Length: 159
Image (cartoon, rainbow, N blue to C red; front, top):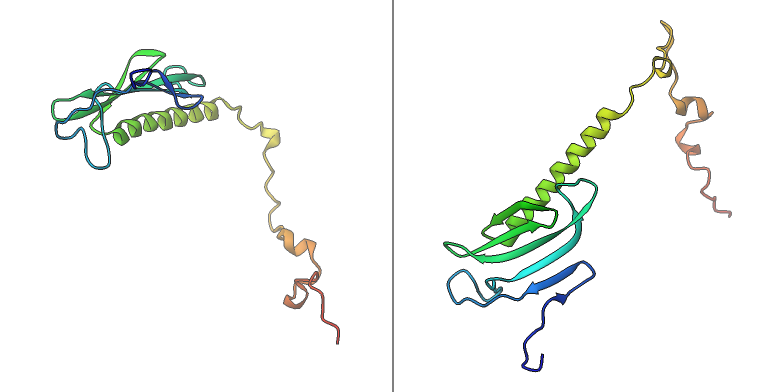
């Protein structure tokens, strides 16, 4: 604005938006040479997989709040008001969410497999008759398997 303050929300990408820049805290744990964790910083990320409604998308909000011993990183979800993850660093809290998505995907895959129809008895291959052994496909398809004829496409050099 005219006073040099950022107006929020700040749209970062089509799916990411900063809703609050937060306030810088000079207490230990909230800053270092490589990072600043402003209390109240809030960012939303849309179109991520919903935990409550598999197959649908939701918006997840991450926020930095004041913890008892330093910053606490919290994630909430737009389609589940009771959903809340917290950790003492951002990588851990997003790692928790990623693990939940992986577990959900695994559960959905298991459900799909259990719902697939079983093979009909007529589709099962009949065993070969006693005493006969089928030849490997390569033995049936090539007449000469000698190493000198294995690469027929290589041109020979004329003298």
